[in-house]
Length: 280
Ligand code: SAM
Image (cartoon, helix red, strand yellow):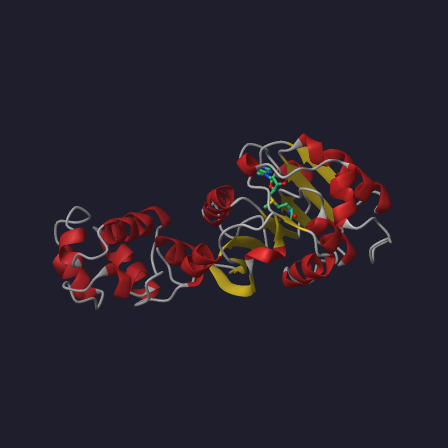
């Protein structure tokens, strides 16, 4: 029986094209088209947008993005075995799907996209984290994308949205929340995937803010945050010693007790401190 979009069900697609999941490529497929449609809806209003999808695999999420009205989808997939299945989707949505067979960490996608651009992906977690950090640290802000809707291991998702004073709070939370609004929009059990991974997953939706929440030089902020969290159990007056010769005075000026630990310092306080460090 055909699926809601008139294309074959994903189990059939996988059988026809012999897409046996490869562990080395982090292949855990989503085969429930209701679920992929829900993820596509979590990506926001796709009409009039180009969507960059990384790691489409057999195309479950790709189909969701197209059915939800994306103007165009640019899909970057490393595994060439997936290309025939993706070509079938392209034929069903003429002129709306472009597939690049390559490594998302190496392909230059910008030449293939027209703003407004949203990004959606269910990727291997290591690739996802690396791309997230790249997308959050462009040379200029605002970035080329409006929103990111990304599947992560639940624990990583919690690190992205964490608040001060919680176990997951650290560099990733500060990096994400400084220039984006980040929230977990869905939590998925292992059984949602084929084959099932060991852990729960979660979809994080990040919307780019027009400008950073608080002013700070990105490189200085990153240096202060990195030094603070490299020794997260230490007091800041000692973990930040190498950052500035008068760090205790600057911490006081930023309203941070020098005996405080990084995990209890807010984004606003880190940005204040970074401005004082940058001022010399
Ligand atoms: N999006 C599909 C889904 O939801 O069913 C597949 C998800 S699977 C977790 C990850 C996909 O990313 C696989 O198709 C894999 O081949 C692809 N992939 C892995 N590393 C990649 C990379 N560096 N660049 C592009 N695609 C990659």
